[in-house]
Length: 460
Image (tube, rainbow, N blue to C red; front, side, top):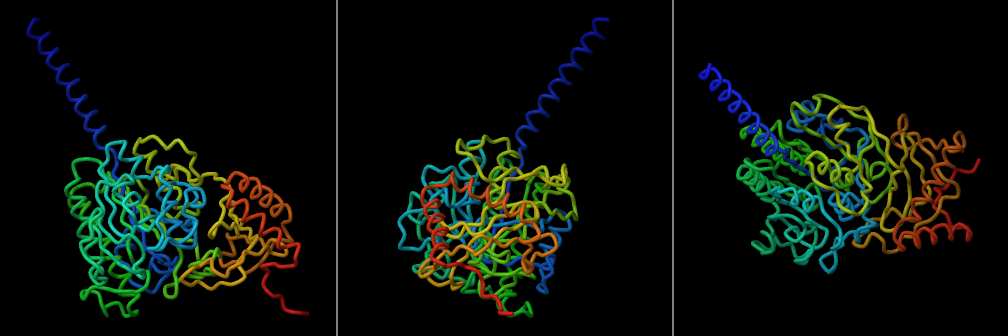
């Protein structure tokens, strides 16, 4: 009997010990997060979104994961979109309402919490590889904003000077454009491999396909679609290398990989059948590809019609990783229930389309309301120079479910929706910084002078 009792106690100790070890192992295996962001990639530039360009790795990523048809940047230009992604808040709240240039000494407000800050507090290893563009002086660079390490160009590749940084040290100037994508990829792969035994966050904002375009000799002239096609093919290869590294290290089922773009295409590239391009708050300027991949946890081959935003990345990652959210309220929402297939859709607040301080459109469910637009679509070195935000003579309403290219104004058929969305927009704007409220007041005041942003209408 004594031997039997000892055996039972031994068994229980072993069982409890095994359970404790399993619990500790499970706790240590919090999910990794990889966010890959392109620069100026259009909604119609991926094969899985209808492009003629060949993107086999992204096609496979979508086949093994979930892609969204209604996913948005937070601005039609780059710096504001990146600020919104990092903070989960509108760029007009965080000090980056416009594109930043090398002459600018300010950046993303220092009292804002980035996604890297949030995950760093949860003991994640963090690295940024690629284009930063929310402040280039030391206190605004990634290594001061929650990232352990940084490798990349601090702003756009068409700006001068063009330094390639490792942390805060310039290692090449000007950066060689032809080798950027392979070097970014090498850095990302190394980070994953050396971080494989602990939770990590990799933010990989590519420099391309922002102009000037450049591809390595391996891809130059190989796409049958010119240099733009070559550049997209090299980005697709890079995504494939990241996914392969995760598989090789048996991390794929514990790593959420997300892929998107900061805004619509500029002079080249395709917005698909959407109206507008970079710099416009029409859909072509702000609707982006978005693919989420995590085999075993994200449904394969699924297409979601849920409205998503780059602002959702921060709260989604924080919730999934068990990290506390910042004290300031976020404008983004947790998309994990949709990404994981637990629900088909989630309710969200009316979403505002800003360009600079100016509110121009709002999205709510399937509806898109246009209330203002610039007097010109020109996009030059200073996007705001000479551009005046003008109120529309009457708001325009589009049902994006069956009119994604915003061709048919249905405001007259749905005056109740127009009133409801206009009232909510006004209410929300009253809670934004003073610059937004002043810009909105000035826009509305122009209506009394007869200046409107309505497109000319043909005379009967």
